[in-house]
Length: 252
Ligand code: HEC
Ligand code: HEC
Image 1 (cartoon, helix red, strand yellow):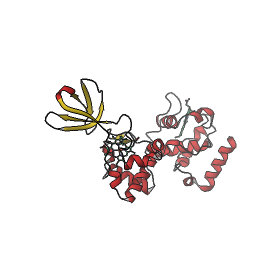
Image 2 (cartoon, protein in one colour):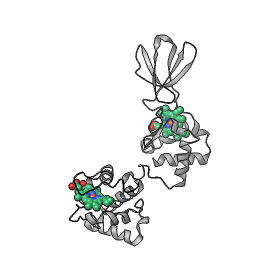
Image 3 (cartoon, rainbow, N blue to C red):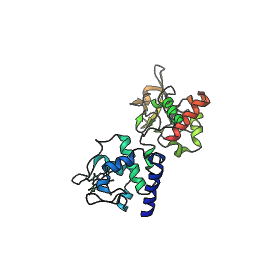
């Protein structure tokens, strides 16, 4: 274990930190600010505990980031969140993982650390722009709520991802089924529904922010629909745009 950690550090020394994905300035910052208490290899010093022991090894990535950002009240471990940018904190935490003999943070990709893959960047721009996906879908807690959050959607759907994009109505995700209400004046309302009872049903507003109640004896008809609320936009995009969007969705 110890030997592995030392080898990692030697590797970093030889190839300089940029070769290790995600470490960025982590080593420089660690050496400048953390080493004095935690030791150059995370072995611990009089003023700080080891960072390569089983206790710190078992911290989840979130917990690790939390300690570095917010410190530990009443101990020598100060809150560093105010002193460094989000990216610098991620770099430092990644470097702590490297000292522990791990490849890095698991969440390095999905905490919003910006990707540098041009396909992914173009895809994200489409998603939030002309393709209009973000009006219905969120990722990293940002976006609409008419459709499901798309964090790790590629893991969830596997090969089903293409089908979900090309033909949304082929399989409709549970909880996103649709009802169509025809009101007395002929107005049609389509949306996701909840609280379906003998008396009434609630339909989600188009912008996803409200649930509107329709009493069944006060409308002309209420029917189930087997058409997804998701438009078939993806199929209308060019091959390049499709590839960009797909790369972005896979990166989530
Ligand atoms: C002045 C000394 C000091 C400095 C500088 C310092 N720490 Fe700490 N750190 C501590 C002490 C003491 C603890 C133990 C707190 C406790 O008792 O829970 C700690 C705890 C931690 C823990 C939690 C370990 C665990 O197992 O629970 C992490 C992670 C950590 N420090 C990372 C860092 C990083 C990264 C830096 C640099 C940005 C840093 N520390 C700078 C003193 C320091
Ligand atoms: C008008 C709202 C709306 C828009 C715009 C929209 N979607 Fe959807 N999307 C949904 C709804 C509702 C579902 C769930 C129903 C279903 O499975 O078809 C869904 C499902 C999905 C799924 C499958 C999720 C899962 O977990 O099964 C993916 C992937 C997806 N959308 C991607 C996109 C992309 C990419 C765009 C932009 C090109 C987009 N959506 C635009 C409403 C929308």
